[in-house]
Image (cartoon, rainbow, N blue to C red; front, side, top):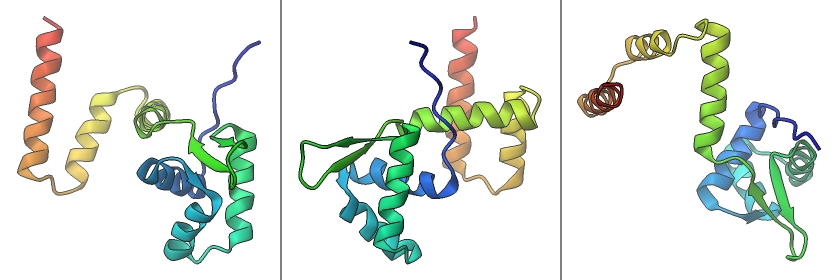
Length: 129
């Protein structure tokens, strides 16, 4: 059986994934409590979104637990890589360097962030030698 790639999450789905990444496996009520505090979302909407995400394969549900416990299928890192790859391909014609230059030029960058970028560049340079 061919495994299809997971769809890109919508903004609301990303919000739910961020909650799961922060809290870890959680019940619908725990997820709803966070959504309600952040967006005023109703419980039925929260449950419906989890159902849609379950159908899409973005979350899994442990049905042995009562109440059911949801967990993210994607890690934050994996989701970030997927979204960045798509952005680089669609907007920057496959050039990661152009994306990085644009990102650094578009916002004020702290000294700590610049040091992290330098360390990464040094590491990449050493690996390519």
